[in-house]
Image (cartoon, rainbow, N blue to C red; front, side, top):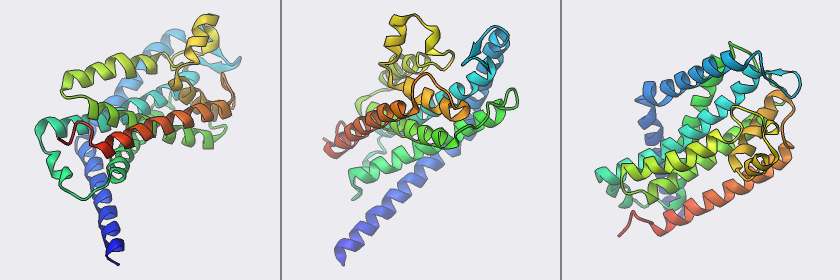
Length: 261
């Protein structure tokens, strides 16, 4: 009975921490949700205006329609990473992380709360980007299940990666370096703005080593029903990558890496 009560208390604690993390970014929604949507719209206006009449993808898909799913997924990934990483590094630097360390929350509860809130923020930003940009060139919804699967998996993976970065970093410039030299290049070189089939063979091979490419390509398949690689291949790569990253984050949390003396 006492064991069940203790488990219930920990579940309640995880739910409370999750709510706190969602509330944290929602209270500054203009910055955490509105600003990324505006950024994506600017990308669309600039690249879509310049290349719409010059680039056709998959034979019949206009460039602006092709670009929209890439921008949506890019926004999902970047904001999922930013949510967990920024929350953890801020708590470490300000010293309020100690209040979580004295609770009976397990590493699973920490992970579910931080990664779950990151998924919520990523999906909210992605939905906002889609609703605003689809007015310019509706991309269609050929297979919506793939859209949801890759959006959730991608947000979960980047939320987990944000946890790893937040645990590793000890100051804000280390976190900025992680984002600027790892997350941003992998995102921009994943086919957001182009089809990898337009690249030379060498760079096509390099792109296929980037798990972000499979997230965006599989996500785009849900809109058009066609993609650069099979969505099942993308699902296998993304699923495996998620398991590795999530497992690493859970193990670091279990050990109390850089958060316990």
